[in-house]
Image 1 (cartoon, one colour):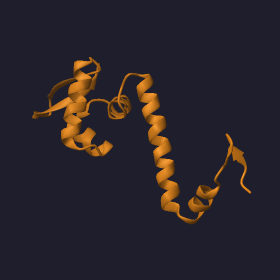
Image 2 (spheres, helix red, strand yellow; image 1 turned 135 degrees about the vertical axis):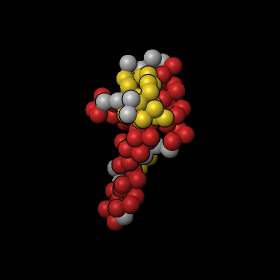
Image 3 (cartoon, helix red, strand yellow; image 1 turned 180 degrees about the horizontal axis):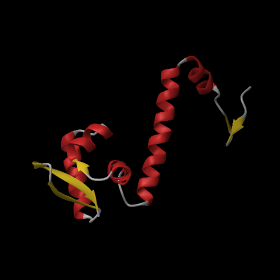
Length: 109
């Protein structure tokens, strides 16, 4: 009989299922990582996407929204909104790219 938790038997089916189905184990792990990332981002008052943008800018320096979008695998329209929000909050600024006047370089503030 499975061990009891709070008056009900604790199910031990998931570990067995995860061992048999790697895809399910990976989904569970992915969900746990996403919850942890959300928690850390919430602590800083940022969403996960905003947090990722700022981390990349710290790591690689100024870059275009297109580069941020491609490298972080975030849709371009979502990236525009992320950069808009970060700019309004004073975390980043957009400046004309000196090498391509049609593009903007996103830089940390």
